[in-house]
Amino acid sequence: MEYVFEMEMMVRDYECDIQGIVNNSVYQNYLEHCRHEFLHEVGVNFTQMHDDGVDAVVIKVELNYKFPLMPRDVFVVKLGMHKEGRVRFVFDQAIYRKADDRLILEGQVTGVLTRNGRPIAPTFFDEVFRSKGWTF
Image (cartoon, rainbow, N blue to C red; front, side):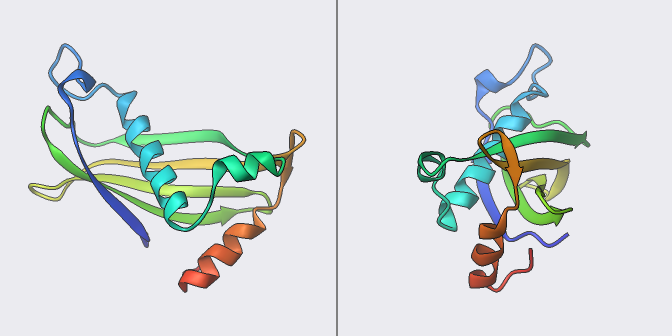
């Protein structure tokens, strides 16, 4: 997998459950924050898209938990992206603990763009990726 974006974060105490590890649902927040930062970085403005009648919708999330994070662990969320068919796009994401580069989680988040509730081709991603020299 080719990752084109990454960001560093740290586990906060309140994200952990009674076992002292990050609650499984919190990992989706980490992945979402990374996706939004990536899209902001490449010039995608969700507010403007919505005002233009286009909304991004997550339609499937697949996560493979490998090892838990604990309070104050510093970790890196990595992101790649590819098309799946005509209208779907997939964020390939992984989380690594920074101290030892241990793989914590691998996941894929599949989305579509909609206009008036109907899926449309994500052509603007082609333009964004081409401008960065990446393949989409």
